[in-house]
Image (cartoon, rainbow, N blue to C red; front, top):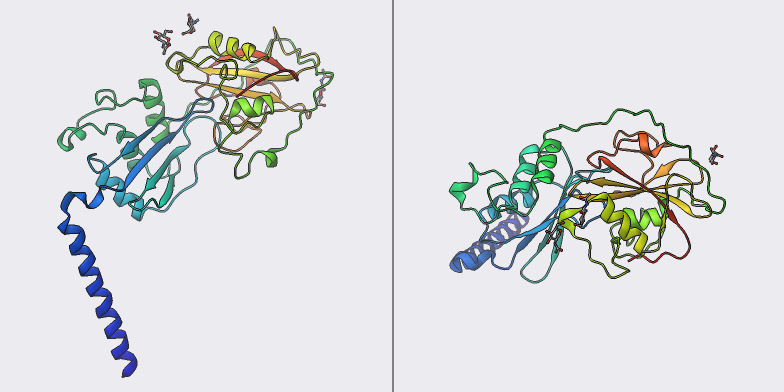
Length: 317
Ligand SMILES: *[C@@H]1O[C@H](CO)[C@@H](O)[C@H](O)[C@H]1NC(C)=O
Ligand SMILES: *[C@@H]1O[C@H](CO)[C@@H](O)[C@H](O)[C@H]1NC(C)=O
Ligand SMILES: *[C@@H]1O[C@H](CO)[C@@H](O)[C@H](O)[C@H]1NC(C)=O
């Protein structure tokens, strides 16, 4: 009996405290959410920083994101090139931080909503009918279309192409080994990208071609000539083919107008890479190992921009 009484008192107490706090929040009306913001990151790039945007209580997406954040468990971000899903970070009223990941292809409706939330200037009634292209979202049309297709399971794989170029002449001095465990660890994995991995330099700065030599990459006009020449500015060796001499061998591919990506040749004769903030892997977009980088499937990185030599005198940041 005493036990039941105690339970009742505890339950009653909990209910009362709930009522008290709920009322307090309601009392403050709209300021009730003012302190909580969501930062949505679309994890899609390998070389450039991923697009991100903030959602505060003035966004028409606020309530939907809040509800999903509280009820949908995290799913892991994808690997390989291209769309990896969304990362949502919160900062709450007293500075507490939280994060939530929505992996690719798991929940179409939620992923589509998160993509659309880039349109956070629209009014509620405009949302249903608008497209990302008309809402003033800062994502380019190319990236938006690519991600929309990926969310809906439309992923283009390039067939293995016959390769007629000259064969790789092995470097006389490079001994880069495939050691994913050196990169796929906390504190390293999210701070280093394909340029860090390709050059085998952990700067923890998400390195950008040209930055160490004082040039800011024009991110809205990514092309092969531009990125290649910035690498050369950083001290990498210009090569006409896969003949690195004493250097280590790296290859550059371009997603025209959107992003760049690098691969490196390891001493086992296979190529490996680090797609953006995700793990180091040794398979291509079609999950195949790569002994011929020009014949590999690079997903949206459709332009093969050439080979570069990584010597000891490079400077990247
Ligand atoms: C980027 O490049 C384009 C043309 O290639 C140019 O119109 C634009 O002004 C450049 N932006 C910056 C910030 O340099
Ligand atoms: C590549 O971009 C640079 C800088 O925006 C521009 O000057 C150059 O003409 C572009 N090259 C090609 C082939 O589009
Ligand atoms: C280069 O090295 C790899 C791995 O050791 C080997 O499989 C390949 O045959 C070598 N290529 C040449 C041209 O010697």
